[in-house]
Image 1 (cartoon, rainbow, N blue to C red):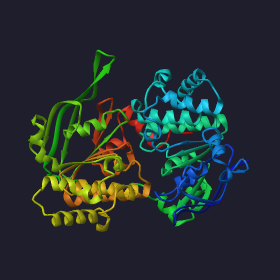
Image 2 (image 1 turned 90 degrees about the vertical axis):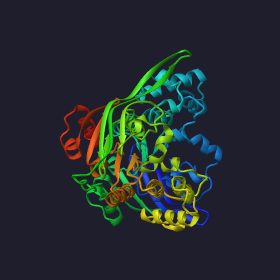
Image 3 (image 1 turned 30 degrees about the vertical axis):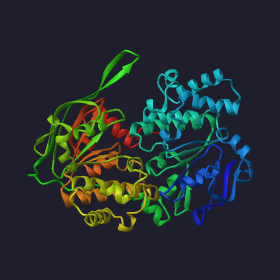
Image 4 (image 1 turned 45 degrees about the vertical axis):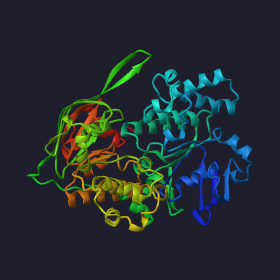
Length: 526
């Protein structure tokens, strides 16, 4: 039985059409995936089902249980949202209200749609958190979003979406930026809950491996049009459209050449230990060790991959190596012959130009109030104050062109760019100082597969051209395999395995590494 039928849907913002004559249907209990690059119209199509894009003009029809959603009143839509049709948003930290506890946010849905009392809703909220696999659900219900890990926040979002047992669940990139093991857990959870309630799922994702193992049918979108649909296994085996073939062929392959055999040492760290002081009540506190007894070595032109689950200490280690961590740090760090672990902040300042960072989310790391020219040129103006305004502009333009952007983009702001373009801007901001070392913290985790490959190829080209050394933090083992010469695997702040990337990822010796590899290939999925 058809549950959702989208007929000739078009969505426009002003004079710009972003979804053009799209039609598809989803049966009760079916799992349907929409895939495509950023800007293809996937999320806008999904938001239109709940009429969550109020500034848009919509035409066509969206039939849910035979009733046209586009003809419903605002009051009727409020009754539909969260009850019959629910949504898991891409970034739970943004979607969840930071001022209310997780339990209160789930209880609100139950009180509004099912008329439960506050006590009944609170009890149901705890039961939902337990059902989605959150440990200590009663305690976590009293936690605020920032007090949960990424995987726990995503589970809380799922609990909220499933509170009223919706007939249709819209999942917008539900596993983006999660570790591979957490991804598998979330997928298994969605599969289990979908089977239990015979719930239909509309999955929006750029992860084709996820689609292969989750969806019954798949639709491919390009430039606002739905260009191909079919049963998942048939479409993956024999895609008809060249764009679909391009998406399926956008897998990372080895992109880096081996560094010079006599390349000089650039970074060495011995017995690194990072700890935080955690308050427990009014007067008690304890030390939490995030990184414990880690040794690092890196030569010029080399990439060291750092992998592990959330909370393993990857990012803390990376920031500590650059003396940017707020944690209490012990151990010896030598950068380019300078023992920076013994230096004061002012002494390190001249070396900052040689150590740069590209963060996971460029939209968060780029100031929304500064133009691209101001953001990219800020570091260069600080470290080379003698440059004239024209020389500075010329350097910014040249650097933007080097990362595949045009100089006429300098006056624009971050929100005017796609995710891939913003990541290129973040790379340009680091590259303009011609550093020797770049810390890349999940630089491609939220990018579409084709855009991800473009960014990785860019990073490989820049490494070859300038002899850059990379500390590459990622949960995507395919990316690590493509970009890293050596890899360390971290668990609970310790290195459990290390060595040449090909050796570690082809024949891991430790059970934890084997678990990561199994999750990366989805071998645990049915």
